[in-house]
Length: 200
Image (cartoon, rainbow, N blue to C red; front, side):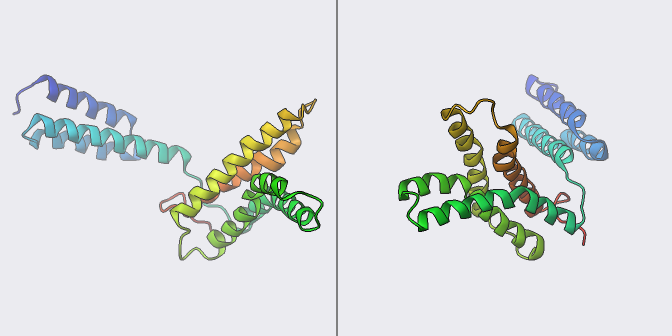
C-alpha cells in the first residue's frame, strides 16, 4: 500500500475525474488506469500518470462527441459540391475579371484570396474522397482551414463595411459558412480514426 500524501490524493481525484469524463465504452479502460496507480512508486510519477489519463479521457470524449458516421460516398460528394461550387464560381468570376483587365491586380489579390477556399476545397475533396490511399498532408489541411476562416471573417467584414442592410444571410451562408463546414468535414475525413472514411 502506498502512503496517502496530498500529491497522491490529487492523482486519485484526477483519475476519478478521468473515469467520469470517459465515454461509456471506455469505462473499463478508465478504471484500469486507476488500478495502475497502486503500482506507481513515486508520487510525482503518479501525478504525471493521472494527468496523462485525464488528457486521454478528454480526447476520447471529444472524439466520441464529434465522430461523424460513415456516409455514402455519393452523399459526401454531393455535400462538397453544394458547399464548395458557389465559392469556386465566385473565384473563377474574379479571376476572369482580372484577366480581362476589369479588376485591378490589388483587388484580385484581395477578393481572390477570400474566394480561394472554394477551388482548393474542391481539389482536396476529390483527393480525399476518390484517392484516399494517400492522405492529404497536415500543412495542406491547415492551409485549407486558414483559407476557410479567412473567407468567413473577410467576407463578413466586407459586407459590414459596405453597410449591407438588411444583412444578406443567404449570401453569407452560401459563400462563407458552407465552405467552412465542407473544409471541416474534409479534415475529419482525412484524419485517421473511426470518423474518417465513407462507404461506397
